[in-house]
Image (cartoon, rainbow over all chains, first blue to last red; front, side, top):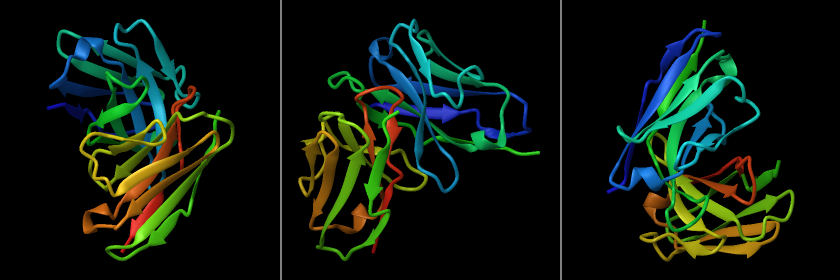
Length: 120
Length: 106
């Protein structure tokens, strides 16, 4: 079955960097568009980034543009999120999600998330 | 950006009740609307896509309706496992945007 497992979260100081990973299994990763979505403490869901199936197209929320970079490694079925210049506002649970192969832009499977805490 | 507004933000129900959550988009998004269920510490679960299409495996007590700017998620006969937070999300355009969530409590 489809599995998405995020890792790499932790406590980091403001201004520092962190790299999140999402290990995918149970589906054809090479044809899948992948997203990152986050949830700040006590807040709702916020879309962060998307990467196309071939890695050529990427898009970001304005709040992270220029600081976060999404990438994929098809050989390892991994999608990553490199986060730089972290601020307290980036504190959140970060989820990766897969786009349905049948329904364009529908996020049909999500991981359980990894917690990033930005604090001095 | 398309703003998504859910109401109510929280609601209480008893097992067996019928509950309705609404979602309003700030502009016409046709039927590009998704409903998710989210329980703390778990992965969000896709319930409804394209405003009214039930995801495979989702119980038929869940239903979605609407188009344009006004949408509804209805649970007919709430079950104990349904107590969670429900989010709507538009996928008509980027950035993808979510409603603020509706917490369903006992």
